[in-house]
Length: 422
Ligand SMILES: NC(=O)c1ccc[n+]([C@@H]2O[C@H](COP(=O)([O-])OP(=O)(O)OC[C@H]3O[C@@H](n4cnc5c(N)ncnc54)[C@H](O)[C@@H]3O)[C@@H](O)[C@H]2O)c1
Image (cartoon, rainbow, N blue to C red; front, side, top):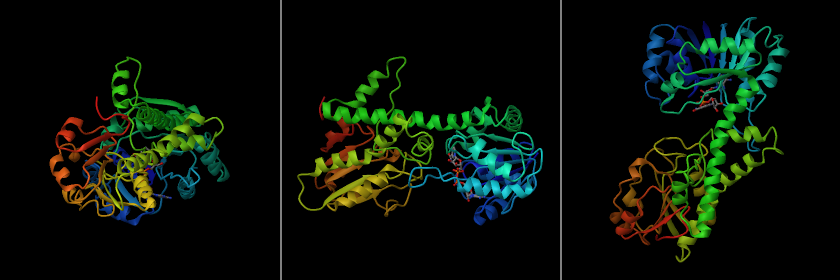
C-alpha cells in the first residue's frame, strides 16, 4: 500500500520505518523541517536504538521519504502530539490540523487511522465529524479506526513488532482492514473492537498504573505517620498470590501516565472520582517530599544547601517531561531558604550535567536521592559524608542500602518509612 504518516516523532517515525521495510511505500509528513531534511538523508533526530539504520535502509531502498505536504495514499496514519492544557483537558488542535491536512488528498476507499492518545470519542465523534463535513461518510466512504501504541521508549522497534495491539474501528469493516494492514509487521496478537472501546483501553492501561502508584504513595504517607516501613509492607503483602502493590515515590511523571488519566476525567468528572483523586495524590508527592526536607533541615539556621540527585521522570532516561522533581525544585525555591544544587548527567537542568557529585556535595545539609539512576547505586558515601555540612540523606526510591549508608556515617532517611531503625 501507499501509506502517508502524519507526525514523525517517537511514534510516527518508527511506525513509518516498520511499514516501509515490510512491503509498503511510505510518505512521512511533518511540520518540522529538521525532521524532514534528516529523514531524506537517512538520518533521525531522536534517540532510539536501530531506528536510524532502519530509516537509512528504507530511504536508500526508495520505500520511505518525507515531505512537508501529504500526497494521495491508500492509508493515512495520524501520529501527532495530544498535549494537555493548563485546565487538564486534551489539546486536540494537532489532531484537527493533521486531519484537515489530509482532506484534499483523501479519496473514497481510503483508510484513516488515529494513533495519538486521545480522549474517548475522538475517533468516532471528533474525527468522524471533520471527515463528514468534508463530504466523506466514515465507515462508508472511508475506513476510520483508532490504533494505539503501548511501546516503551528504548525498545520501540522491538515492541512495535512483538506487543499485542487493539484496533478500534468505527465499524467492523474499518477494524478488519486496519488489522490486516498492521499484520504486515506486528507479530503480537491484534484484537479488534469498537473505536471508543480501544481509546478507553489505551487510557485505562496508564490509569491503572497511576491509581496503583497513588495507592502506594498513600500507603507511604500512612506508614510515615504510623512508624511503619511501607517498603516492608509492600514486599510482604506482594507474597500474596493475588496482590501486586506498586512502589511509592516522589511523584509520577512522563507524558503518558501523568497525562492520560485526565483524558478520562475531562469526559466524566463526576464519575471519575478515584482517577481524579489518584492524579491529585501523585501530584501532591513533591509537596510531601518538601515536608520531609523541611523536617530534616529545620535545625539549620540560614540558607540550607540541598543536593538533588536526578531530575528526569524515571531512571536512566534523558526525558524530563512532567517530572515531579522539577516541581519539587520549584517548591524548594519558592520557600526562599534553600540553595538547591542538581546532579544528573542525563540532562542539562541548571548545570546538572556538568556538576560533579562530590563537588556538589560540599557543605550540603541534605542529599535527596530523587531519581534512581544506575550510576547512583555504588557511590562513595564516606566521601559524601566528608564533603557535607550535615550528613543526612533522604532516599525517595528505597534505592540505597541503609547499612552501607549508615556505616559511612550518614543519617539515612527513607520516603515511606516512619522509623529509622529496625
Ligand atoms: N512516545 C511514546 O512513547 C508514546 C506512546 C504511546 C502513545 N503516544 C502518543 O502518540 C502521539 C505522538 O507522540 P510522540 O511521542 O510521537 O510525539 P512527538 O512529539 O515525538 O512527535 C510528534 C511529531 O508530530 C509533528 N507534528 C505536529 N503537528 C503536525 C501536523 N499538523 N502535521 C505533521 N506533523 C505534525 C511534530 O513536529 C513531531 O515531529 C501522542 O498522542 C502520544 O501521547 C506516545
